[in-house]
Length: 217
Image 1: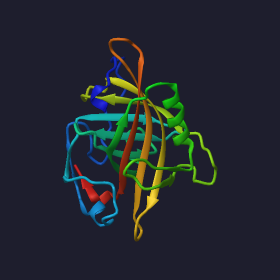
Image 2: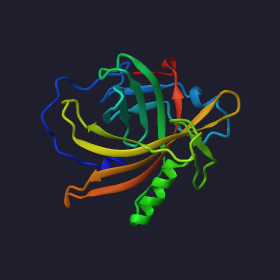
Image 3: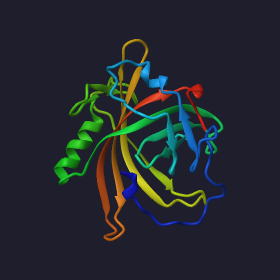
């Protein structure tokens, strides 16, 4: 997914890449697999490793002033942290997502159908149960998705290697006990190096939340 993206490097920002509780590009993250194994057999999230080798890092600045820090492996597993500051010292949440499905639209009708799914109260797909809208609640029949740019880095020089425009919505479903499984549905737009045109893809990722004690780097 992200291995196909590219971009130009602009002037370096004032500071280099943030480290979120020691998690940053080039490091190994150790996970407590009990964080998801305890959620039961109904879980769609599956990860058969307790280590993540971080090979790319993304940063999103949200309109409300918050930040999203993303850390990727070569297998497109995404370790994500949200924070109130760019440096990631005031972390507000940690999640981990695995890729579930990826597709390319065949035309405008596919784009319209995907946008309708992002706006809907619920989301499902082949092999998936029903997930309910998590962001903004599920009271409204239709809800505009969230949009943002993500700066992605392949090295630690602090200069973005590519920028990705994303339109997305977060859904979730309750699991037995107090468990919660997340589904992130994304429309991703990347610039093609040869044609200079944007390539659109539809991504579905499945995830779970992590507590501070369930990972280390």
